[in-house]
Length: 457
Image 1 (cartoon, rainbow, N blue to C red):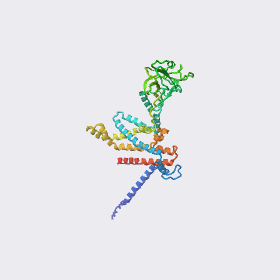
Image 2 (image 1 turned 45 degrees about the vertical axis):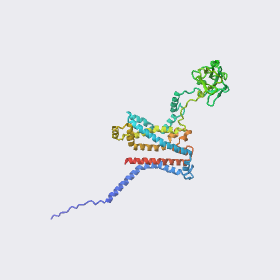
Image 3 (image 1 turned 135 degrees about the horizontal axis):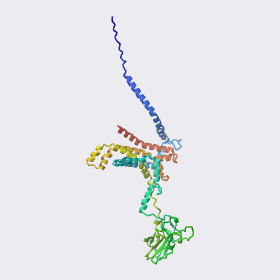
C-alpha cells in the first residue's frame, strides 16, 4: 500500500501596517539625532558668541554704570536726551540713506558698462580689489589722503596745485613792518605810511620777519636804491629786509648787505581813499611813482603781499568729515555691488533685450524700462545688505575722523564703544545703544531672509 504525504507549505506571517509607521518614525528620529550631532558644535558657538552676548546686553542695559543698581529704562531715556547720541543717530541715518543708494547706483551703472568693455574681467578685478583691503588699512590710507597738509594729503596737494596754477601766492607770508619806523598796520593786514607823502620825496619800507635764505633768488642789495633821490613829480623808495646777516647794521636804514624784496606790490592812495597808482618792486626792492601832481598821498603795502599760502580744503573738518568717510566706504564696497549686480545682469533673458532693440528702443530706454525692472530683485537684495552693513560701520569712522571731530562723525557703533570703553565707562548706557542698534538691524535682516525664501520658492 502506498501512502502519499501532502507537502506542508508555510506562508510568512502578515506584516502589520503599524510596523512600517514605527520604522519610518525611528528612521526620521535617527536622522534628526545625527543632524543634531553635526549641528551641535555650530549651535554651541552661535549661542556662546551671539545669543548669550545679546541676552546679556539686554539685561545689562537695565542697570547703572557700575552694574549693581537696577535703573529700569533710565538708560534708554538718557540715550535720547544725550546730544552726542542724537548726533550719532542723525549720522547713522545719513549713512543709511546715502551710502547704500550711491553704492547700488554705482554698481548698476558699472555692471552695465563693464559688459561693453573688452577687458571686462580685468576691470572687475580692479574694482573688486579694495574688498581685499581691511577696513583698518583702508582707514589709514584715506586718513593720509585727507590730511590737511598738502605735503602729506594727496587731495590737498592736487587742490593746491590747481589753485596755484590760476592764482599767484605771496612770497612773503611772514613779513611785517619794523615797529617805530613810520609804518602802521591796517586791520586787513596791510601796511601804510603814517603821514602823507608828497611828490619829490622818498619812502623806505623796513620789513622784518623773514629769513635771509628764504628770499627769492633774484633779490639784490637795497643799499644803492635807498639813497636814490626822487624827481619833483615822482615818489620813490625801497622795500627791503631790515636785517644784516651776521649782525651789525642800523635799524631803519638799508645797509650794504641788506636785500630788497622784489615783486612786492606798492599802492599810492589819494586823499579820497582811492588807489591812484600801483607798481611792483624791482630786484633791489625799489619802486617809483611818476607823474604825481598833487600832494597828500599815502603809500600802502596791500595785504595780498603777506597772504598765507593756500592750504587747500579741510576735508576732515566738522562739515565734510562724514561725506569723506562715506567716500572711503564707497571705494571699498563699489566692487561688491558691481559683481553682485553683474551676476544678476548675466541671467537676464537676451531675447527681451534684442526684441526691444528691434522695436527701435535706444540703450537708455532699454536700461530704464527693461534692465532695471528685471534687476529689481537683485538691486533690492544688494541695497538691503548694504543697509545692514552701514548700520554697523565702526572701523572707518573711528580711524579716519580725527579726535577733535570724532563727535561730529560719530555713528551708533562708535558712540556705543565710546560710551562703554572709550572714556565714558558707562556700560549700561552702552548696552542700551547696542540694543537700539540691534532693533534697527533686525527689520532689514527679516526682510532679506523673506526675500531669499521667496526667490527659492
